[in-house]
Amino acid sequence: MTNTNKDEKVLTEHNIPLSASEMGTLWSQYINDSLAVCVMKYFKSICEDKEILPLIENSLSIAENDIKIITEIFTKENHPIPIGFTDEDVNVNAPRLFSDIFILMYIQKLEIIAMASIGVAIGVSARSDVSNFFRNLLTSVSELHDKSRKVMLSKGVYVRSAQIPSPDKVDFIDKQSFLFDFLGSHKRPLTAIEITHLFINIQTNAMGKAMMMAFAQVCKNEDIRHFFVEGKGISNKHIKKFGSILTNEDIPAPISWDSHVTDSTVSPFSDKLMMFHTTTLIAVGIGNYGTAAGTCQRMDLSATYTRLSAEIALYAEDGANIMIKHAYLEEPPKATDHKALFKKKK
Image (cartoon, rainbow, N blue to C red; front, side, top):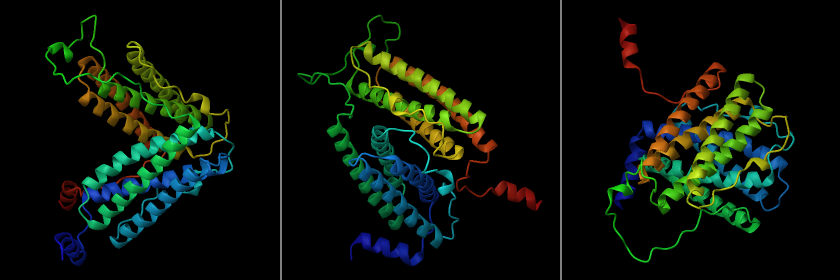
């Protein structure tokens, strides 16, 4: 018997409970999958493109299977099953709010986000059943991403990042101004890594802007509508900022997604779902900015990412307060408050 099999046998015999990390990643995956089921059911009802429809069905199947497996794990652990999102949060009979091309691009971008979060989940999973679940999920999600990428390429809607010339030799940085050039009139050209993060952050903001524009059209509560309108403005400002950095160096910036939103005012989703979806994308954006700030080597870019991160962090706080106000925010599993228990006994 191999060491791996022995480890799996020990885990089974001693019924090792879920760690906080395993519990948290499974809980988050359940919530996100329940949202995906609602979104994909609506997309399936409005999609007319025969190449895109199988991608929607694939995404829906993955999410439903995830929910089934996580429910089984939580049931064995006597862990309460999250509420997440249900059929009450989606109206599949609502008119078209997004184009089929939007759906295609949305699936491709969401799978990129999912692959990153699943990679973290794999890294913190010790139990074999949890690790196997996330490893299998990563395979399914990466395959769906590849399928959506190929459809986008075939339809001519895949937006590639800019091309730059290949270097003719390996070189080493020998000037401090490579990093610090806040005041210089001539900044060095962007590196391929810096271009990559600018490209990713423009595209993420473009998707977020289009979604918040659509959500603002159809939501019911006025404070939530105001939140979406404000978010649309923030996204637009960040797109312009990142785009200007690229265009100032004669590098093309990605295009807007705005034209893929219709003029419908009938909501396919509950305000709760739209708020959660938006705040989730905000969290992704903050993570993207942090990664970009940590990897780019021009300090003016790092400063820009840090400043913009602070702005969207405040916006995220506004979103959390709105969700708490409307009782939309489901509480994740948390540690025991021993201090409170001690005070209660006294």
